Length: 375
Image: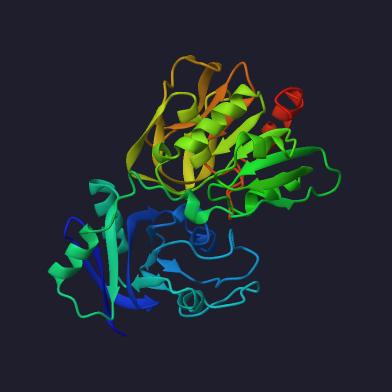
């Protein structure tokens, strides 16, 4: 087994062993704190252009299967583990994890001290990274290559991950509502969660216009998760403002939450190392309940957390905050049907504390029936 190197843009180098595909890859180094759900992480489009460091020490135990994918392919730029499983043991497994990574040409590295790497990223912040295996390069040459990589700030990535053509997920049972979902990097679990509640979901490309949205006669609009810097999404932000003006109910998650916030006039900023994992505590300010939630974001909204705020679309408030660092985790308009959260209520592979938010969206569409803004 050949040596491999993980190289950060601040010059720190971790030596490990080649794993998965060989070669080189680059991206933003981020750590993911979940102990399960690695297949969902790998196939989540929000991880596009990111090299994911798994903090759990043993990865690959349950193999992979065709049912748990969140999209049609693996999106991570690279995969970093401490100890990959040497034996796959699960009745649902269809394939070995490393074999799947090799088949999709995902460069990985094993055998490095992922705890030390995570502490380094936590202290220094997310940074550019490269994985090099089976290559004859000096340490200086590897650092130079990493420093040529574009940072995540300013990255416009939804075009890479969005569907090119609209498609429909039918409601399960009686159809009760129609939702237009703007695909900024949507996970498969999201339309399934809506369909299970009697919603027919029309998945539209990232660059859908208000006319495209209105053409499906939606009862509501869903803004999905996705990769990149929300500040670059000016076209989508303007469309969201059009939807707000048309008074069509809106529910946004993750990247969609940030875009709704920017449509309301708030700025976004880059977090030091972001929130990624399935164990993030969030406070629901209205109930005082603490929810354990699934996250994957490196940007956050700047919005007042202790007072009602005013926008051109009426007043609103922050509804949820992170208990780790106080980051805005949810907001809503008080005079119009629009709300969003920074995390994932579909939460494959869990937890499911926030699944009630889909029911809140249903209630919102009932409260604000489609009476205006329809062609």
